Image 1 (cartoon, rainbow, N blue to C red):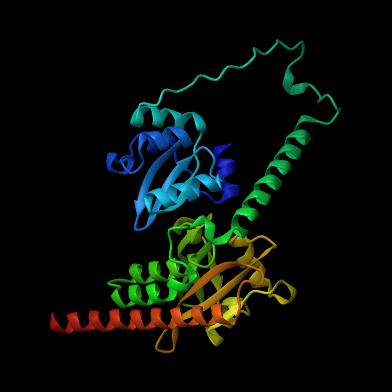
Image 2: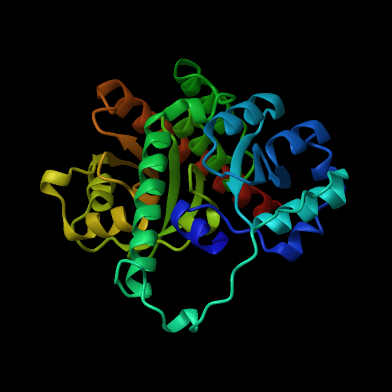
Length: 323
């Protein structure tokens, strides 16, 4: 079930063994009262993002509250419930509660060969249950995505996002800092963001954040730039918006790779160094959410990111000449 949830929620899977080896400094980020109340376990920290193993990775209210309390963007993780409770007992001294079940009565015939009560083969019943669970998960995830900014209350407001991105890009000391500034800007407006870096004739996943987006998830993406697509259009025009009514096959592939539901679109702007595209900033957006102002801001952030890359390259060459 944990693997199932991880796959279909796009939430990282925390292996049970790793739960018992978490750094005490990470554990200290969450007090025992919160860990016990919400059945959560802090797992790791990277910049402004705190990975949290949760009993319910779709609990939007808990995610919002934890983000407010800690000041981090919360990235939910999943693991078997029994292992999470074991880790909570180890790190916080929270006692595990034994679950009681009614004893199973012996069957007259092996259950594996018995038909279901309705006469439907057991395998078909299992498939129907899985389909129902998938539908419910998809509906809940879509509603969370459409909630938009409420998932990341600690990020800048949309009005503050552009000046903060400008400041962070000017102060960026490496390419990861540039990426973080672009991602944070996008998350101030929309719930999912990714960066695809250009390698030869392909765009490959580099960074990701927001609901279901992690670096590991995004890094599985590889898209050709030699065929018509929203990426190719963004490379040529600076900005492009995926449109279901008139999309290329490659767009549908990208939509599938990003697991974008029908109610959402993909907005892309390109980041250039001189005249060459170095990467793409990708946002998953509710339909109708990108107006001319948002489009202009996306393009402006991309241009400033390009200048930040140019500055880093120039500084690197200076150091090489000095050496």
